[in-house]
Amino acid sequence: MTKSEKLKEIEEKMQKDNDLPLKRGATRLVFGVGNPESEIVLVGEGPGYWEDQKGEPFVGNAGKLLDQLLASINYDRTRVYITNVVHHRPPENRDPEPSEIEAYGKYLDEMLDTINPKVILTLGRFSMAKFLPEAKISAVHGRAFSVNWRSKSLVVVPMYHPAAALRSGEVMRSEKEDFLKLPEILKSFEEKSQKEKVREPDAQQMNLI
Image 1 (tube, rainbow, N blue to C red):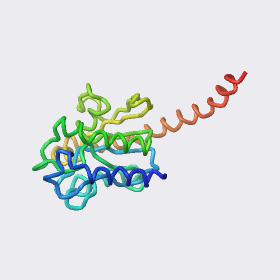
Image 2: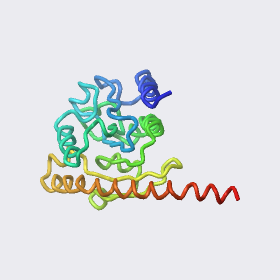
Image 3: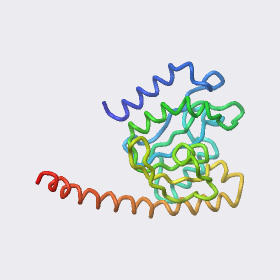
């Protein structure tokens, strides 16, 4: 089964799950979009009005800004995968509650296990809290953290949510600067991965002796 097929299977399970707490008030499920083969996943908060209407994450004003931020580092949606911590729109765009994040979390975990990314960009404090529960976004945004999550090594880079950047000029400046740091972070990760691959045969050979 390909990653795309597995993600489709997870999406179908979510469509049938009537216990998801935000489902009743939403227009449609907002699952995820992008390249399931990507090593980079962006995790936001939850769908807004336009996402609820179209069934795709980040298609409103915050989504347009996200596209611009990705373009600033020569990326676009075809090179990453984008999803949220909850996949139905909270009423009146309120913050998702802990119980709601938990209910959707098992599916998000399945999605991440399937995609198996190396780098996760968290957009906003709710997705950041999944991987860095003690962190404050004002103190850690734009920095890379090595996280052991579900027995996997991940690089997590907390970012402000694009919607927050639209509301604050100061946050907007920070957001743009943080995205411009990403190529160097990704380059450092790639160099580290290559060094580990070079060392692996030696380690295997030593184990055989």
